Image 1 (cartoon, chains in turn purple, cyan):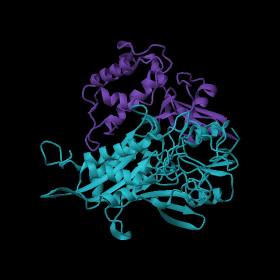
Image 2 (cartoon, each protein chain N blue to C red):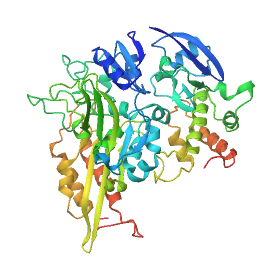
Image 3 (cartoon, each protein chain N blue to C red):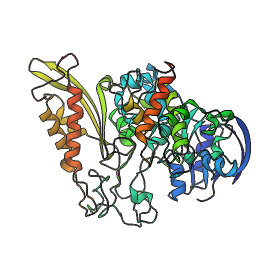
Image 4 (cartoon, rainbow over the protein chains, first blue to last red):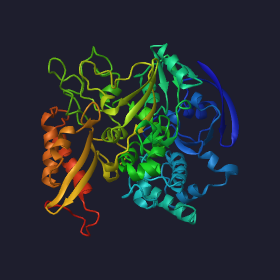
Amino acid sequence: MKASITLTVDGRERSLTIDSRTTVLDALREHLDVTSVKKGCDHGQCGSCTVLLNGRRTLACLSLAVAHDGDEVVTADGLAPEGERHAMAQAFLDADAYQCGYCTPGQITSAVGMLGEVDNGHPSAAATDVAAPPRLDRAEIAERMSGNLCRCAAYANIVTAIENAHAAQDGALR
Amino acid sequence: MRPFTYTRADDADGAVASVTADREAMFLAGGTNLVDHLKLGIAAPSTLVDVTGLTSDRITDVDGDDGQEGGLRIGAAVRNSDLAAHPRVRAEYPALAEALLQGASGQLRNMATTGGNLLQRTRCAYFQDRTTPCTKRSLDEPCSALGGWARYHAILGAAEDDEGLQRCIATHPSDMAVAMSMLDARVQVLGPEGERTIPIGEFYRLPGDDPTRDTVLRHGELITAVDLPPAPIATNSTYYKVRDRASYAFALVSVAAALEVDRTPDGPVVADVRLALGGVAHMPWRAHRAEEALRGRPATEENFRAAAEAELESARPVESPAGGNAFKIPLVAGTVTAALRRLAQDPSATDGVSGESA
């Protein structure tokens, strides 16, 4: 079955006609040439396809595009409008958190979405008291980022990068 | 992947009618499990009826009119991350918030819904691999986990088919459902004949003579909401999950526990207790026998362990050269004991211990 849908991708409205089986990931990469979002496992296990869908981090590989007609998608590309590096990407660069780089767009997008979740007071499994407001230490960052796998195992630097980016937001987050 | 028609009904009644009319139609919610199954060829629906906009994505206080004063109604489309973040869930049902937060990843919790999570299918590697026989996919096939890699498989409730033979040892994967079983959640369902309420203790089924069916839901029945009855005991509750890595993995064994302790001159006594186990059975396993063994008894580590062992008397581990699961019996006993020991701690005590065994 074919369907015509519209997605707002990285700030631009894009219309396309797709087979109903097409995921958001394949719609972006194969139909709209948005290759900043990466296909890793394609089964929801690695996080490399993470996008912000209506502002929340989401796995594009497990989302059917037809179910997201009219939705807003932000990829790592969209975090750097006009080519200006996003603060999170700069923090990754400063902390040497890139290595092979394949997981990086998903890591950065996930980190940006994750800080928004912390800002909204969402707890994590690393909390000793689930009812308390979150406090973002290294253990919290690691737990909250556990859906993004890095086969180079650059985790230590990724955690440092996110820690630094969070600190640089200057109290905007709890 | 088999081609399918995607539709979105105008309302829940229309969605139920659409799926009821077509044996091969399915509901689509968050898609975290179903879209994966489409790719793996485990599910091959003719039609997907998207219900994410048809059921509520709100969590509401339930007033006294229907006898549920103080409880919560969770719309079926509420995302796992939103449910875990809800102030009343965190304060009054912490075991549920903890269970949700120990499930999946941040991305998946933003996608998965309450209704969909209850219907998550087993993560048994043989079920998910279409090239290996699996009696849960087809009654005509044998179980590959028996004699295979059974590390994540059931030790309780899987043995009782008509001939006393084990047919399917798959486990239910949801952490949320274990906490909801402990909390006596009530599943609100809309079907072709109207609405019905299913207590969660009657919602799931053991494999019995038909391992292909996970629940008592009939084709076309849609979960619209889940109600949490008021449960003061749950303010002192927790979820312990044991797995092969620290995060983002399914449970080898998990425990949802709630405990109410009377502080008597002779020491703390169990006034009431609720226990449910994950990773051990085809469904979330409410540990009624352990609960009965504990009520009215001193809240000691020795009694916690004895109660867990009473529950495990019917356990039947699988021996397998590729990896059996007999280790789960002491693991369950230890995890139950650890969870209850923490819940038994006297919050007013400065040394953080309680009872003669602590």
